[in-house]
Length: 98
Image (spheres, rainbow, N blue to C red):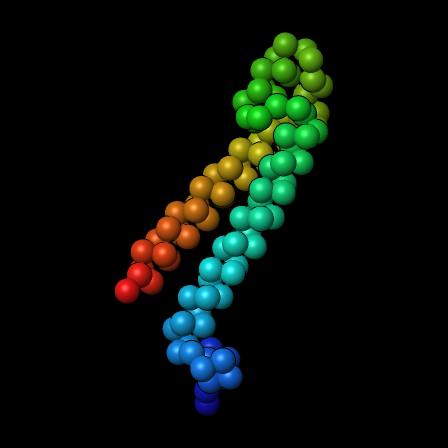
């Protein structure tokens, strides 16, 4: 029985491996765009460019700790996830060079 990758590859005249690589590129690009959208929402919401600035604003009393603290943690996690995606993208690009 042919795999989905085989079927798609045959339909678009590519190897299953090429289809997998292109699918990974598309997925990573999509995830990066979604992650950037979420990060931008925090930049706009708090009018700061780094999540650590939220922590300082909480300590200074300029922001209430809730939900700002949770947003700061989420933002930091988004940055870490974005870095992982970029690493995957770089590794994938180097793996697919001729």
